[in-house]
Image 1 (cartoon, one colour):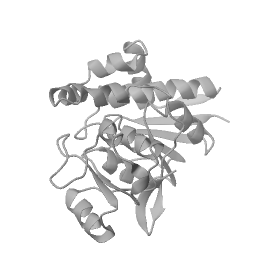
Image 2 (cartoon, helix red, strand yellow; image 1 turned 30 degrees about the vertical axis):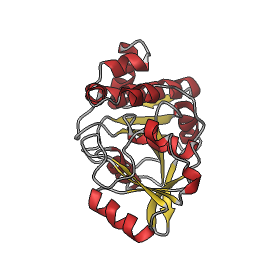
Image 3 (cartoon, helix red, strand yellow; image 1 turned 180 degrees about the horizontal axis):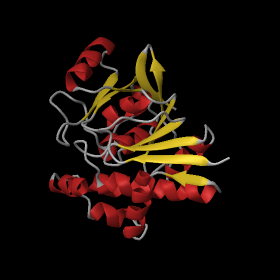
Image 4 (cartoon, helix red, strand yellow; image 1 turned 45 degrees about the vertical axis):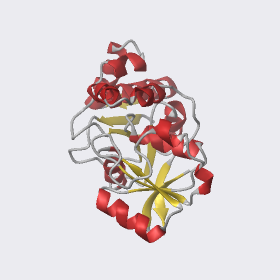
Length: 242
């Protein structure tokens, strides 16, 4: 049986019904989400806007970490930004969970949930593991790139291309849509070197200007994690858990 692999380069259009979506926002939401669970986080509540995040924090109390960004920096009153490096400083086992809102990534996760029963957070750190998990769950796999401001970005596209290559190595009969072909062409253009793609990426360069290049370097590490964050429900709220 053939497997259809669909890559969507930004989340602005309608999404097809897919067995499993892998949402990629390598700079930095899905990298931060994977790191959160690697470091012992229990549950992460993704929300679309800052006001909703404030409201949830008020209801749930101080043992919930408020994290995220607008214009790449934490909004006023947030405990930390959308930074995997910053997250490494916390003992996440001391918290009941986290509330997270970002400009692109959390919105893409919630959009993907509307067209699939299974949504994973993917990045370079868990690339092979998350692709294998998606393959096990059906013959229609999607990779949704969060992009930036509803535009395709080199960083997410190259990461998706790497995942397409992983899938091609594991599936004998794999059909690719145009987005998947563009993604793997981008991956090959940068000689299958994610750090080289990052160095040329608009978003990465803007993070460098803000003094956040260490996040870019961290996000470029490949297959260092077997963590598979999945979107589910917690107390009737959209939640990411492992």
